[in-house]
Image 1: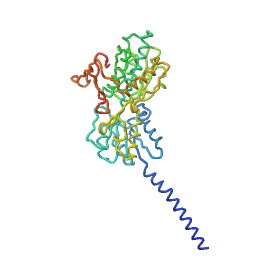
Image 2 (image 1 turned 90 degrees about the vertical axis):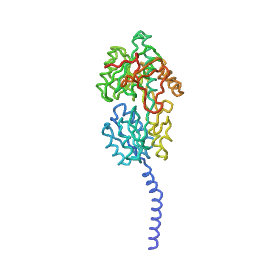
Image 3 (image 1 turned 60 degrees about the vertical axis):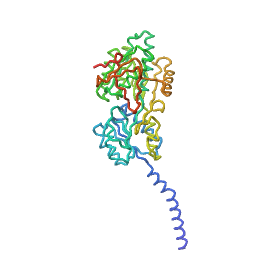
Image 4 (image 1 turned 180 degrees about the vertical axis):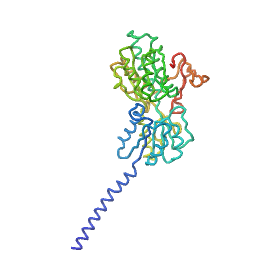
Length: 396
């Protein structure tokens, strides 16, 4: 009986050991291989800019539900990024992404050489000392702006043919945050797209002085509409501009071009189309680079400049969102496809023509576009920063 008991215990121990060998190491390996990924947002996810950026986090979680754990800090002011960054590092994040404009990230990267810090690139950003673990990235959104300009131009042409407006009344409006290269590059591309269809098109611009103020954006759009603008674009972070267009619908011809998300839900009668940067290819690619033990810039596809990567329609980094078929001009889908294909082939030269422009911060810095201008040539951030004479007017 004693021998039987000992044999039974021995068998049980063998089974238990086998079970442990099969399952415990797998579980331990799984826990050790989980990559912790941090995200720092300048706003919350209800604002279009941050909502669009957060889609990359959602895509990452769906693609690697067992291998990735994400941590998020939202509504982080530019001057307050240090604490949430240190919290994410303390939580064990190996890589941190941010859509903030703060210059602190390049400085703080030196404190954590083992953590990859990836920030959306913006014009005139302070990169500080070169740190191998600090990375920047951006989509060539000027391409999406140009496509939206073509859509706007086709609508203007339709309105002219229908005798709703005259060619002289083909005026675009643009609600902008600040006169930075990122914004000037975008609204210039928007205008150039429209002028490729209706050469008489001009533009009026209003700056709000802030990225995220619904009331100011709505008021600025209303002022542009009152100034005779027929189609309003935006480079600000709320839907205020779209709402202003929707409220003016019926009183005068006015339409809207959105950014970061489709705005058909808030402006079904006036929203023609929207464009956005698709952050998914970079965010998922950078995480996969770490999973495979490779440098980010050796793994993610795009235009590489040191620790900086950019791309456009060619790599899926820029997208055109839902088309409002009920109000767009006939044939718009075919023209959109044609224009996007032109960007993929590199055959569209956006910043070229009989134009001169001036830097709003330095009147001595001018440009002549007769020879063209290569946007994002040396860096993923926008660099074109000249307000074109005669065709663009900045309103107070």
